[in-house]
Image 1 (cartoon, rainbow, N blue to C red):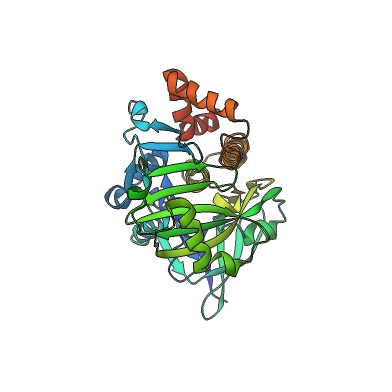
Image 2 (image 1 turned 90 degrees about the horizontal axis):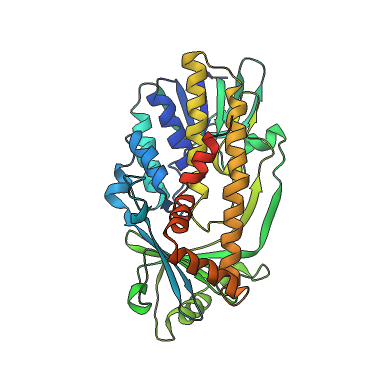
Length: 400
């Protein structure tokens, strides 16, 4: 059996794993990064990059694709579908806090493929696609991973493993770590289209959360496409949901009976709220979807995963290059798992509830909250910093 020896093995080359591996390689750590697919995932699930994430990528020299190809979205909007009432929030109000006072809307795979290409150029890194993690084991000194390649099974011996192997993480399962939480009863149906929705629905921004107790929706603009997310009942047949008839009914309810909308993609997925019972076991650290899953409302999932990977990576550099205490891994777990529970999970659950309830349910309370934010600059600034994820990063840094 072929054996590879490295300092850190990174499993998964999505946006989280690719950024984590590049951060390590740029700091002189010998990295091997493996990815089960042959060219990386190209799904459209995540597309929002928050300001602190852009700052982190820029520091790595990996924000150029986002800045060149992505759409800058300084304003995002909450809209009540029934009444048409809107509340908008402008990131320009926190321009004194960041060089990037906006979200960037861009398909995640454009960034992750660019970062993976930069990683492959590093003398300290090896990148292997079509390599699927099968099993991991560890002792006091090392982690051993068994990896299926197109022609064989190979062994990777590493001092540490960064597991960015996704929601169905083999690493998490092999370690026997619990993944408590829940799955939403409804399915999420996602369309993408080049249809000019902005011509039919006036006043849209690039990011729009439209609440309604019957059929809430999210409208996100990415380069060349609108992405539309709507709920579907758990018992609805998937074939029916993906049919032309259902597509037409969704867009007719949204835009009127005359709208003839062609879609570029149609996808169904389930949404989970889950947090692994530990982000670290021995020499193995879990990041991103391997460690936590959440509703897409607010665009926190991918961003928090990148924050995980950079937090863990910097601690591994401290251990490997500067003789840091291995207990730094326990600090990673405390920092990122605490913030995941206190902010990411709490906020996405609340955001999803607000979307599905609309103003009609608990209307006055939610409307009063929005009006207060609209009228109180201090409260609005606090809200913007929290939604942009600056607050969660500060909270994590304060944990020792």
